[in-house]
Image (cartoon, rainbow, N blue to C red; front, top):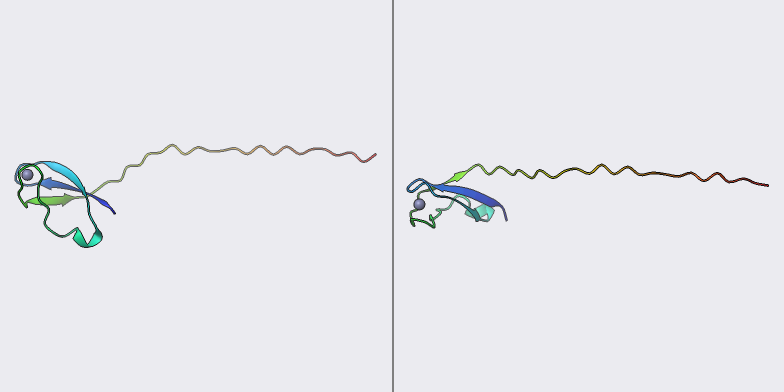
Length: 66
Ligand SMILES: [Zn+2]
């Protein structure tokens, strides 16, 4: 379920709610003032995870046939 960010136009309170896709256009009640004046903001997913480059060392064993 995606996380949407809303901001109340009445009191300016910003909050996030988990909503379904079919609920995203429905009215959102501000948890602070209780007004249905919240507008949806563009949610920016900033997941900055360091990509670990794994270097695989392959050791070749030299076999001798005697
Ligand atoms: Zn509000």
